[in-house]
Length: 238
Image (cartoon, rainbow, N blue to C red; front, top):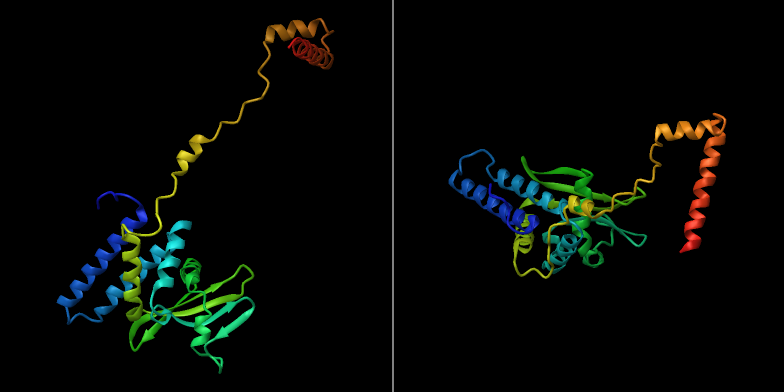
């Protein structure tokens, strides 16, 4: 694998797209394989989850931007529950309708998915005997569930490609650069000054100690007074 040119996230998006295309091509040539459609969807899920978890701040903004421009949120995820400003919006409520979904903060969807995945708040969803998708949920710092959504692979696939194409595009409205190398940041830090006192010359100390009656405490006090007097003399001369 060649070294990625340019920002890593952009290079990863391009490579994930190519991986998915290769797997889909293999599936089309192998119609008799057992549940062949599962391999591409698994690759799609694992790769896109990596793209969602990797991004730093600026890429997270771009993911929110891409999501908000997608035609319909229900084509991305079936929102089962979300909590917004103290209100609970639950699909099982009798008055649930499209107006509830319109209240959902679409730009926050990548954030919800990212947090849920990072904490492994993920359960598989069956489609008959196949692995049809995943249920993802998010919790806030207080431990309250703030979002539950079902991601069906078949509907999620076009959105995933849309996100990957957006991340790999040269026309993105956000510049998604690599974060700074931490070693470069460390190199700019000033080394802390070493203010530990140096060792005294042993012969000089022995003589100093002798003229102070071999009393170590008296010798040290005299030395401190001598240094203070020298400091004051030099400062007054400035």
